[in-house]
Image (cartoon, rainbow, N blue to C red; front, side, top):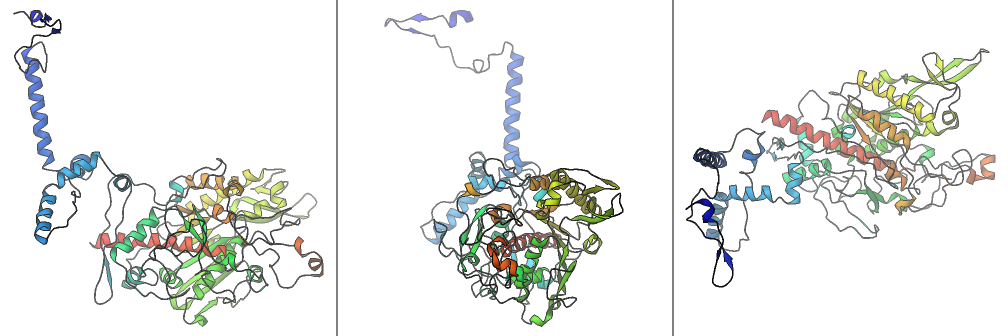
Length: 602
């Protein structure tokens, strides 16, 4: 019968139409016109099936082959187990044999957690402590997929105008050193104070108030500077590091925590009068009992003893304006209060006031480390030249870094900042002030001048700092809260006792910090950006205000409200949080460093 006759419709007695069905054969499945074509198709399918079965049960050893090396290996399905031990044994046997099929299932139907695991580099600390107290850290488990940036610090959007910080400029280099970690430092990571303490998992109050305890593995249970009282499992240490690596520390809220501040008000005699609101008579204390809580994790409480262990034999240097001095004094107080014999903590030149000299250095003798501050409000160099009449004239050299740069370029950790001095009248107007080479600009926009200055700094860092030795940080702009004027024109912030709670009242992200971010992206040296702008913008309650000094001049006494400090911060206070963030960053670096050496030893 001809082919056309085979498919001719036939009318049944019922009036319906149907098709005549021929005998079943493979030619209907592949209606090729020639036998050779059909034969080729059959051979192709047979080969494909054979290869698939072969690779399925013989995974590739090549780690770059995600299909055959990953989907056929993994965690097997687990079923609820309520039977006896014999049932558990048989169940485990079943699970092991079924692991390949469960892996295929999980590959095509992944959960959210498995997705995040495949898209990030996961570090696990497998620590075992011997009887001698030394710690052996296992090699890191690293996924071979492209890692997601673990230290991304996107600036929070305010009114949709804020740009997101890109991955590259916020990545943190591994801890710079050329020698493997000592047994003491490894043990500290495992059993050090605060790191060894178990997390207290308390629920976050919905209104952001009430006592909130840290849920990280670094919780102080014995007072502000208490010692470790518990043990930490290898999973807790690994989870702590993993949570910090994958957490944006700068996106969060301020919550009340009765265990703060980190040091008792009045306990640190090193605080300058300008920041010592307690000694200057500020009556309210609530602003000291606020903790910064990132949305994705809990910021570890700064353990001064453990941070000094991380700094043993090193130089930590702050470079910048008086806001970095604010941060420096905060850290000195935290670290000093954790030392048993405070006589072994002293300023190298015997100074007790820190506003007049170009640099200061605190020595922690027991740890052979120093914490230093270099005055450089613009980062670039302040200079003098002569005008046409021979009179001296101040200029700002946009093409040269500060004169003290050679003194700190070999430090182990350097924290830079600049910002507030760029808002002053002379820099804001930019007339006959900015200089490059012998050329003085008759007028230059302050934002363009700032870009030139930060570019000069970035080039200097790339050319002079060794990233294998020195970790570089840049602390972002610290918000001010003047009402009714500026710092020199009657601006006020007195009677502020609560932080801002409605984010619509936060200021737009500063244009200068956007310029900074673009420069950081173009640098060869990795710079960790401490983007504290938004978290400080909430804290209109944290400034010295009228409590910036004890004794006022006659003019100031007549109108004390006209002489307020709404730029700097009371201590204890907000800069303590900046140092907790710095501590968290150092913990991440140290953990990567320990795992790096453990990997090679393994």
